[in-house]
Length: 206
Image (cartoon, rainbow, N blue to C red; front, side, top):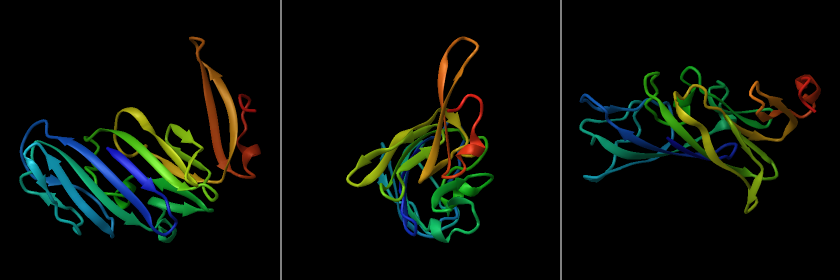
């Protein structure tokens, strides 16, 4: 699962590219989602190209190939998301809540606990308003054309979508480190709203 977020408060563009392979059995491809504004569906496979129907809560394809790449482009409004599921704004910061079914408000997906994926995340946002971007285990402050950009693998092993976290905004940062029992030193960073840094300090922070 490759996710690309172009973050805007009222019109965030989400491009999801799923590399799907059927391991056994037969049946339709059913994707779960609650995205109200879906711009484009497109799938490619060795047998050719096609389009999946858009605008349905559970779009399906009756006879998908056993191996395909599916691209879904959608647009969501984080500022208007007051249900605090999916991608939303809180205190001027982008936040996500994917449990238990919040990811369905971001894009369409095989959102089942027995479906595991490796997630690659790319994010970009206005550098002045959102200088810090975060995604589960990666963070970046790199700039490109006046935009803050982040790119990386959220976690390098298959997982469900539930622990996926992304966000961005103006955040205070606390640095620290932890040494494992084998002597390996691990860098630790905590990001909090500005002003809350003293509440997030621990003996290993500075």
